Length: 158
Length: 146
Image 1 (cartoon, rainbow over the protein chains, first blue to last red):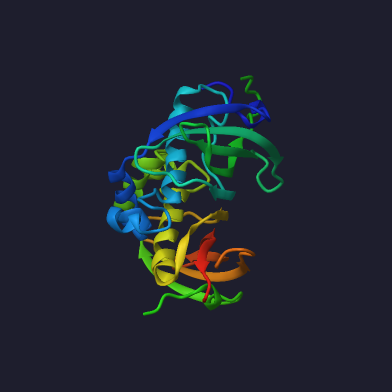
Image 2: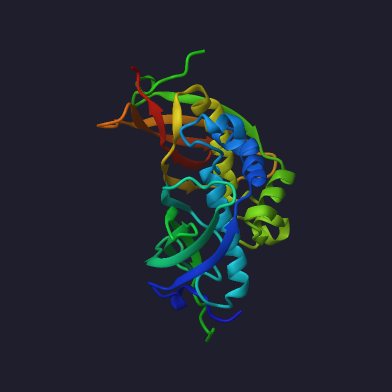
């Protein structure tokens, strides 16, 4: 893999990561394990909830962002966050619109900030704004991601 | 048991959300489905990263936090869903067989100006047997007393 070092990442670079259609079965399977609230696990009871039907756990929506980010990394060559691996966390995750069975979210990422790290001089921190939008382009999900990206070792030219 | 209301969550209240044993199989299963990076799938690959060994995906840690938060807080409350998560900090690696324990601290309680509910922000602190490994903030929307 060439490029993809911290130095190569450009603020403003934007990438569509891919799309995923959420099925009712996978929404329920995830929620039974990790988020067993009625509006995530029980289609009948969910009808009487404030959501009027089953919706995906916000954490399921978030985990799917990660999967598509990884898949996209494999095909993106050295660009974007290709070398990113370890993250110290995230900020400002918003679940703006319920994700219902059959909905397709298209996820994207945009580099918004690069931070030098005194504590880890061989890495830089890259912040990204990440989104999931529905078929009408409406924003359903967003957060600010953070990832440690290695700096180009001395002597490497690409 | 009556569901707890917004007023039952004053700033400073701490709720013990119980424990969760993280198995290697579950770490691998979650990673294959959502976060197939080498350090979440393979011991040797993990040793070569700053994590120093196989560790759970941070998203998996968030999902476990949600499970503990559901059992400790929202399933017992007049919960109307979550608007988001202000922050998560993945501080230390979560390893196979770690027994995680979570405390949910109320750090903010903001009533809606116009609606009969309020936003309660919890700082969920997650520990293994040795130290704090993560913090996930959760902000459920909880109904107010009539």
